[in-house]
Image (cartoon, rainbow, N blue to C red; front, top):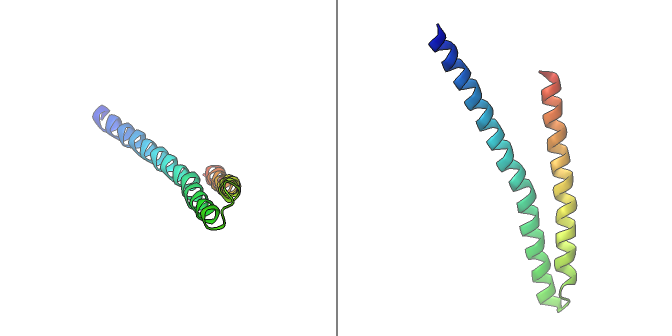
Length: 85
């Protein structure tokens, strides 16, 4: 009986750990992907039009805005899921 309770507790702890790790990776991708794409696009445009660093900085600022919105939406979804449980 005690062994089964310990196993159940271990399973729950592992599930929570994996869910947390998954969320961390997802948030990392939400932040990094727009940054890389928009910064690379800005760098490309700066090289093409010889306007360094205007487009690069614009791309970085835009990626901060996009990432912020995506993280906000993700956090809102998580909070809704928690409140529904």
